[in-house]
Amino acid sequence: MAVILAMKGGNLAVRFFDQQVYPMLTNKNDIIKMLLSLIPLGGTDITNAVRAAVQDALDKPSLRDYKLVVITDGEDDNVDPTAFNKAKSVFRSVKVLLIGGENSVIEENVDTIKIQELTSESYPTRLRRFSLETIKW
Image (cartoon, rainbow, N blue to C red):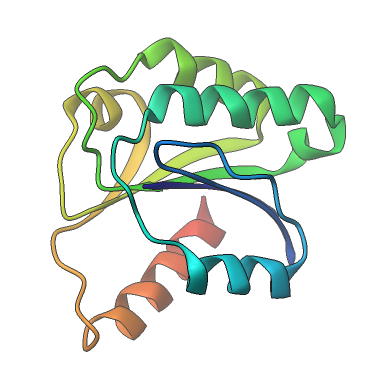
């Protein structure tokens, strides 16, 4: 599963992806409900997820001033770097949070924060660090 997060200040636009594309959510309560109800199915097509985020920004120009953050494990052998290049031309910035995996195409083409392991003990610290680093982006 991948999460596409566009953010500007306290505003969020979130899409979840696995074998299907979930609707874009902007209400924080809806985002939390979706997070709590999702069952990751695998098979995420990261390229299509990024392309959908780009299309969202093209359809809704106010999203172009947002930062795009892709949260994924990187498990995709067919990531197309041109999708990230297009995203960089549409959003204010594009970053990837790579959790527990690797993906050389992503790491070579996008600013990436790698987290090798995320446990219940490390989660609060990692999340705080990620939030601070994302703000700096």
